[in-house]
Length: 48
Image 1: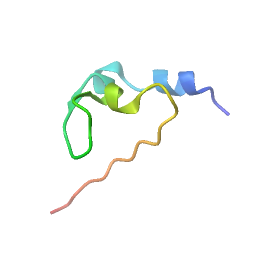
Image 2: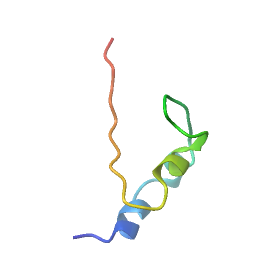
Image 3: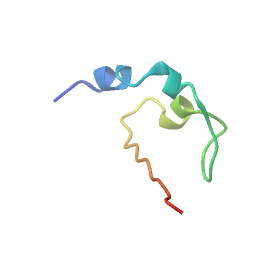
Image 4: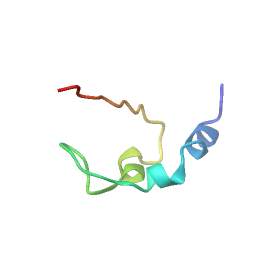
C-alpha cells in the first residue's frame, strides 16, 4: 500500500491551489477542502 504522503504529492499543485466554490464547501482552495488526513475525492459530472 502506498504512503498517503506520496499520493498527495502526486496531485498537481496547480489543481490543489485552485479556488473552489459550492454547497457545503469552506471558502478557499481545493487543498483547504481536503485537509491533512486521507480523503475520498469524488468528481461528479452533470450532462444536462
